[in-house]
Amino acid sequence: MVMGLGALLEGLLLLANALAILNEDRFLAPRGWSFNDVSGNARAKSLKGQLIGLIYATQYLRLPLIMLNALIILLHDILCCS
Image (tube, rainbow, N blue to C red):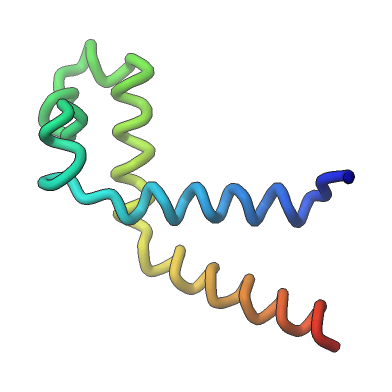
């Protein structure tokens, strides 16, 4: 089975959705992954700081992510069911 570009983009969209729904108070902060933990300049450049920045970027861009999900669903229905 060959994975196409569409499948790769859908997988990245699913990953973005997973990051967007993480709750800081209930999930991230008890594990030391809150934005305040890496607010220092030296720790912001680490891998953990970069991942936390990615999580917060996806949470900040929830509205465009919702619109992108709706577009992908519509395109999938049009292409597969026509």
